[in-house]
Length: 92
Image (tube, rainbow, N blue to C red):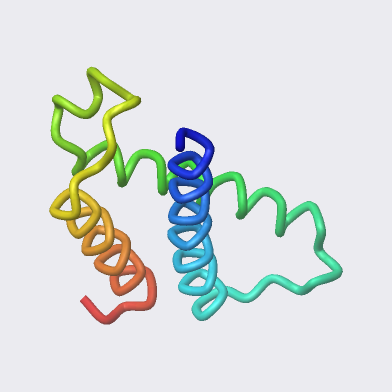
């Protein structure tokens, strides 16, 4: 079961990263040939997603990383991710 949870969390993190990467690409595209720039953006976005998520996850989840996120917490993370993507592209 733990493997399933880890895979689900990993997939959700990848969704967050992809969402923000697409938003950044919409305002400042990076050519596929610019491998170093692509990698740099990927690393920056991964860090941004970690920080964004930690900012909205309640403290009791920070204390116990094995605790499964409640649907309400996942909704908070989803909203924060979509809000950030909207900010990046200038919708809000």
